[in-house]
Image 1: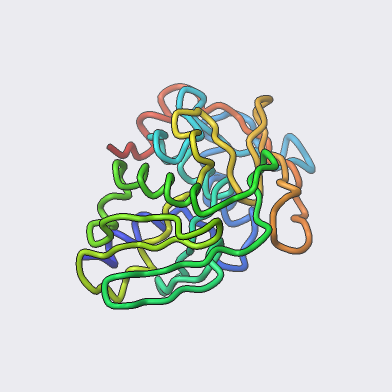
Image 2: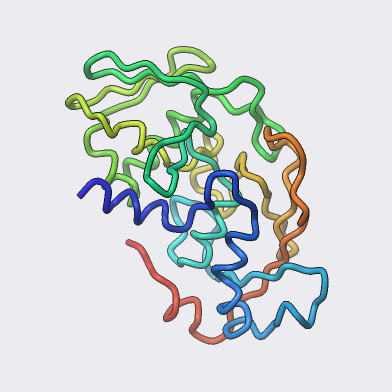
Length: 231
């Protein structure tokens, strides 16, 4: 049951080592049919559909279009491989002691707005996740506390060998839970002029071949009918 829930939450996530093309391949059909902007008519541009009436906040957005695009904007402590094994993204290391799980985050991480990513942001995001659809995979994790600026301790209700695989909730800055487009630490950042721009503060070395992803509002009822609504 846990693996089923994890696969649902990770279904829109890009593959480890993958690129933004993973998202484009999944959405090419929707781009052509629902937005009316065929990529072939705009050579050199990657155009993806999105729901303009929805948010780019992983804890308030409802449509599948935006939820999938958010995998380019936000990172979790861990990401899941195709085999559902956890791989550290924000997390650098972890220690398990019975019903406590201590995670150390990588040093030097920043959000797209330039602010440092700290343990307090992880705790804040965890508390939002516990009140969202992510709560389904966080039932065995009771609480989180910042031990210091780079370490978070999670308290489990019982020992759970799958606990790391559950720490995939998106991390956003403390205090931005009500924002329609909070800052993230992902490969791209949201721009108000309907585009996703490459996030230069991304901690990975190098930059993507596609530095700008253009967004096109889904027309008609595509964003409501053809997209999965959660919650």
